[in-house]
Length: 292
Image (cartoon, rainbow, N blue to C red; front, top):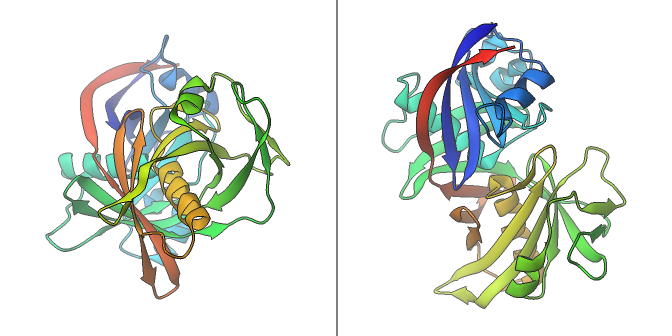
């Protein structure tokens, strides 16, 4: 048995085991990651964030080519050990860890580039904690049908890609959203090649208040299950509802999830419209754990 140090952190209840491995010396198997994330026999988390220098992980080469200043790479793994492209809550927690550990800094008015499998993501401080530019997004073609426990019939969804895949489903009322049973994976027809997170959303009343759109959401994350929050899912949800609402819909959104509230902002950039996510990041405790 080998003991490794870890830190536990979360962003609006979406929690992570953080393992510092700057020189890329750890080769964590899917089974080891799943054991660490197990809520009964391990530390317990929705996923694992390995803190590694971009130059010390194979996927980091693309990040450094895109942005030579992206020293750090977020090696994000789902709770089942599978690799994921991006995590909106995770990248804020990742950056908060870097700052608290003295591994990086964000001078006033600047951003910190972080390598991910979805590309480099720029993170800055915000009033609520941190804001991450999730980059360009796109609507996927087709209209997948989603079947979930608690829904009497399949519902149409909208595919949104924000670096990782999502399918957003509109729900009629708070009561219907509350009655959903997300203990099992919703079925998507046709099933995306790499799977997808599924978000179920209901608008607040009124939908827009003081120029800000307001919705409530629950999410089932691939490789994890239902979580208290999903950062990229929050962004996808706001984008989907803005799309459904039409041309007069706002570019600023407040999304309530079981773990708290996150902000979403859409803004123009040189390469097209980007979407940004803002919210808190918290480090809870540190410790050591035996790695089988």
